[in-house]
Amino acid sequence: MNLNIRPYQTEDDYWRIRQFLREVFLLNDRKEYCWQPYRFDYWRWHGVENIGDGPLEKTVFLWETPEGELKAILNAEGHGEAFLQIHPACQSADLMEEMMALAEEELTVQTGGQRRLTVWTHSDETMLKEILSRRGFRKGDGWCEYQRRRPLTLPIEPKPAPEGFIVRSLGDVSDLPARGWASWRGFHTDEPLDGYGGWEWLLNVQRCPLYRRDLDLVAVAPSGEVAAFCTVWFDDVTRTGAFEPVATAGEYRRLGLASAVMAEGLRRMKHLGATMATVGSYTPHAHALYESMGFTDYLLAEPWEKIGE
Image (cartoon, rainbow, N blue to C red; front, top):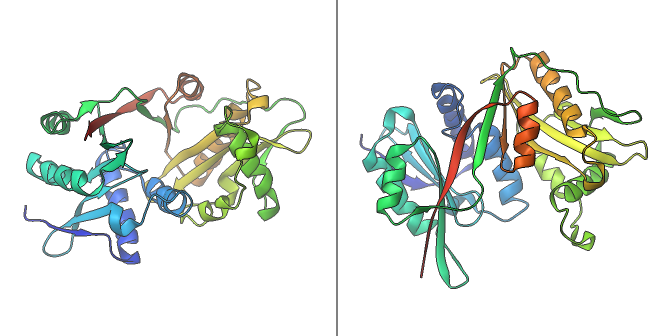
């Protein structure tokens, strides 16, 4: 198939990419061989706007037919990382080689005097892994992503919060400082508290097209602190709800709060018409939590790295 390559150019490309990801997610039986739209949203509004991963014009590339139909996307997520999003009807070694050549040219970063690029692939994607190996990539020693899913036909077990704790939707902007502080303590437990950079970044997350405040759930302690939280991204086109992120502040762990907010999230997404739920996990603690919530089916995404001078 003759495909033209070009970089991301306009806001129209953003919406076309989201539609492409929806289409491919459904064609892949809702397995995450390509991103779900919420992940592209989250990267665009959090990764690019808050963390500085962009700009999109330098980190996203499109492959189109002469008629302008989108068939593949190469994009970053974090500096020095690359993801290949390919329509299942267009999977070929030639296309993957072409995408990898562009990834090495445009997305490789220089760190510590070395050039580095990480490409994510799945454990069962034999063709891409063979191409990566020929190009000098090796499977990395870092965390793999367990891309978990569970049908919502499974029963949702009650997971009540401990006495005195309340699970509810996030409120208006007055709730954001407490939510931002909980996020810092949930994901930066080994870092000094004076490294906290504020909560205003959440305003960009709330700009994501799929964001719904009624699906942004918090567990509030008797003191009024946000102790745990999860955000659900519900896509009515694919009828899928995704959890990202999920966390508990360090001093409130082992109380069942993450289970409580997730159970409420599952109930709400099912009420809206979702038939599938997804979540990604990287650590043994997260694996155990999500398996206890019924997320036992998964794809394994692996990092392949190329490091050199």
